Image (cartoon, rainbow, N blue to C red; front, side):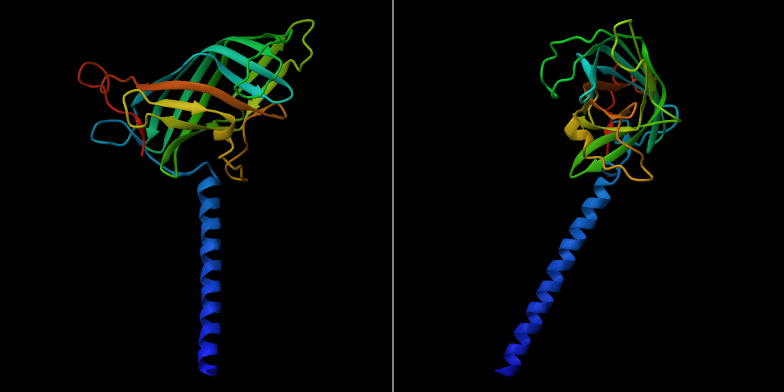
Length: 243
């Protein structure tokens, strides 16, 4: 009987240790996958799932109105946006972007209608001269982490004699986009506050998107496609995505 009790006690301790190890492993895995927006992925650019390489170009066009939300400060709405770029290899791409038709509004909750315009003129075009894109994977979904290349993404200028906001606002940090319709000829990149919060900033990966000193988020959708002559034209509509 004594040996039986000892065996049960040893089994219980072993079970508790195993459960503790499993919990620790799960937490560590979650921290790893979310610390930079997801695990490293690869860009793919054709029907055979060939990986992207230098010289392959692409573009992404905004669908509808895109919004830069700065909670408690201002929301910047832009009616048009276009990004063009080139892959460096299968793990990194560089691009530039331009946004027009931009206006300033009093901030609202994400998804709510804007009703009060701020008496500030947004200087356009808002241009991102260079940024980098990194492919990411998390829980079976594909993401792209957009980072500034250099000191900042861009500077947004708000003008007007009655404008109550800071006139010069630097946009810095990183933003995470979810790839919808992945590995198709026209994938979409979705941005929202919830998606952005999957990215947990660290000392090596930088910060969330910032508008000056204020936290900022994108609420926008963009449709992407390949544009170089080797991947466009009749019979050459190759898929684009993250694997």
